[in-house]
Image (tube, rainbow, N blue to C red; front, side):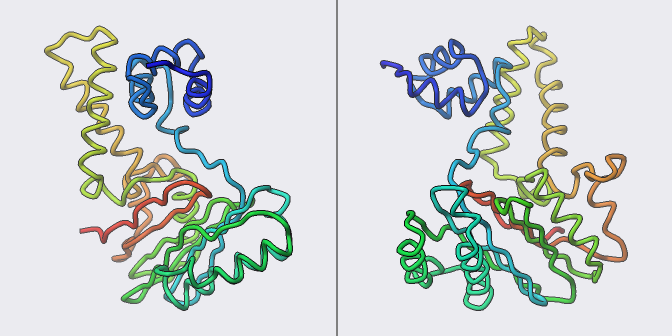
Length: 273
């Protein structure tokens, strides 16, 4: 198929690879951008896993924690100028309070009137995005973190602890590292298969002997698991310890949610065994 300049630019923006490499990747994969991203990673030409899917829209992530309930609400607009408007900021907080009180389901419909009024006032297109509500079933604490620009919000539910500093630090960990799941058992099978194939093809491209390829891939997959599972990640404040080492006296992380503006949400983690 014909590869347009726009297709090449889109792939380049997401991967940081060279223009000719992007064009070749698209040609080799019949214009399929996601497959082209994998192709570039296999060739060692891209760090697409960290760059693909970056948010391009503006807005804020509203966040609220009250006792055993926490809520996130995504409120999107066209420009950063509007996102810094006091009325827009106030509405993002109101939306988080709505989710805390009424749940995530039906959120956009419930706040549609407020969104319409805000559009009329500020003269820019807006929309209510995703929402998440976290509630502790047992004693514990919900940690939260919202990045200074308001575009990343995190909730972390911890049972068996009342340590607010611990909860906030782990929420900051989630914001910084964007884990896929709580532990390796919760990583989606299709993601594992995709990552293994990428590493296998990359190892073959490096010219490693066929008889040791699988062993090398196993080692690289272990590194991958450590990078993307919250409990096994090196702690951002002290990389000599893992996040799981912070949990003392029976404390356990039972759920986390991370919203980055315009991106898909990290799936809520299941309870650890």
